[in-house]
Image (cartoon, rainbow, N blue to C red; front, side):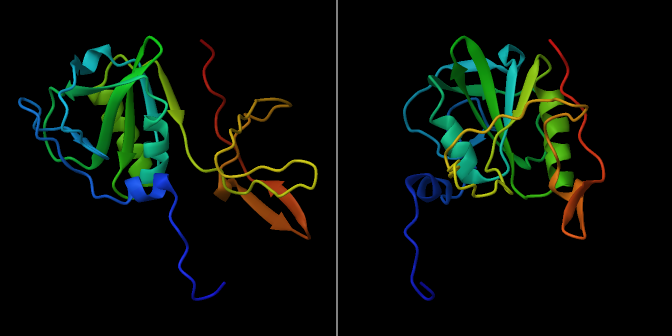
Length: 184
């Protein structure tokens, strides 16, 4: 109803906290969405093989819930920090969760570049976030929190960027598409 305040989900409440500098000794460059006072194991940037990118803070918090363990990481390259990193392990894989402080395709590209420079052994990168444009179909109820995976087929890569589509006379016309992911 108009004028009523909506109750925040637990993800949104955790994510709304401002990121702050980690206070753990020897790690002046780390920032996380929610620093822990408990002592965590420290891993090297070279041991990280998966990067997960999130555009929004509460998306990053949701991804952190999937981590089996959380770590600290000592970065070799300092400099100005524009990104929020969290570190952990999923199964046997060391993971970095990266999020720019600002939204936008340019910021996302800069964040991806920084991650590729700071974590040289990343072999898989994922963009995890809220899907926009998923229609409310009568027989398929897709809601926030559901997992949607795109599959390349019929000459399309499986991912359509929102600004690569135009509408003409009630029809959707694809202006372009993203490249297919590499095969491993």
